[in-house]
Length: 104
Image (cartoon, rainbow, N blue to C red):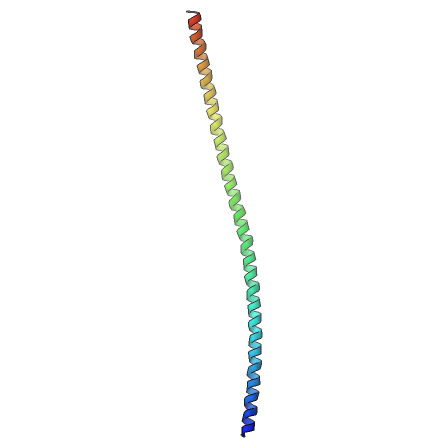
């Protein structure tokens, strides 16, 4: 093999390696683009899931608040009834006391 043959062989090998490098770079770009697309899909899915969880939590909190409001209203209603009954009892006792004074 002559020096020219060796140089041609090396040049051919260099061209082959350059082609393989270009293919590898192209595949790397494709892999990167695919990874970015997958990342975006994952982020979109997570955003949807997070929004659903946030809405479920908000509804649960609202239901808890409505239950608490209902309980407070019921307690207030019972207390109002108790106070009305007590007031009626006080009125009855006052009327009796007045009648005892008027009619001994």
